[in-house]
Image 1 (spheres, rainbow, N blue to C red):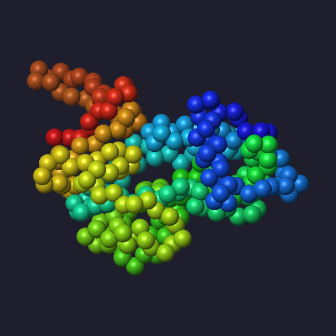
Image 2: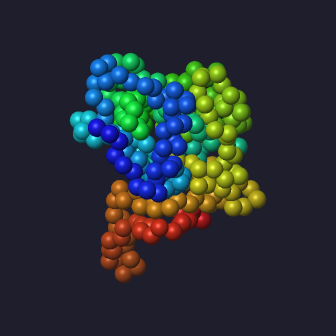
Image 3: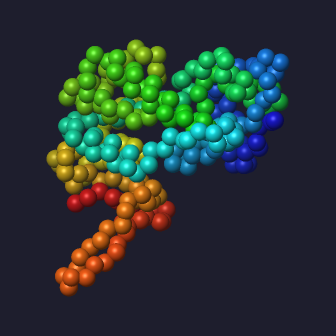
Length: 259
């Protein structure tokens, strides 16, 4: 099966990304007699990062096990834990996180593709697998556990660093054979679980109950509220009213920072 033809506007970035995979030896030439028939690649446009991500077609395999999903409850609990940390925080993100995870050779028959008429085998973890985030989270938590100092907390491929305990540069340059992007200071503006956070007052606070000085923005944040139960409010006249949490149904940036 050849790759699924991407949209015309995505063709250029799609081929550029795959050539980068070949240059990094993540895609290796493959013999069908060794690894079986090739599967198709799907081009996925990630508009939030303005990137085109080639993805393997694991839809049939994914139907047999539950996907790892960071729903509203998981994200809210992680944010509550992170808010208990001190104000001197930085975010460290893996560079091409999934593509840094090497697969065992026995799994390579499931990772064969055709690109520009040639057969290749993807030897790294693919985005299209349902359990890929769980694999990434387990790996990163193990790596951080080996660090002699505490002060770090991870969610999938994002690491929050308390720089009062350990330097983000030290975590960034740790010899774990993992490649990280440059750290972003939370007070200067950084993405935390996909949310853009920055300080809106001279005294930045990220402590418990002190989210008032932080503005959080995300495009289309419906998933943060859709799992919350309806709330019953009692009016001054003794009647009750049934209210649902407000949702952002539009595409514009909406502030969700409390005051």
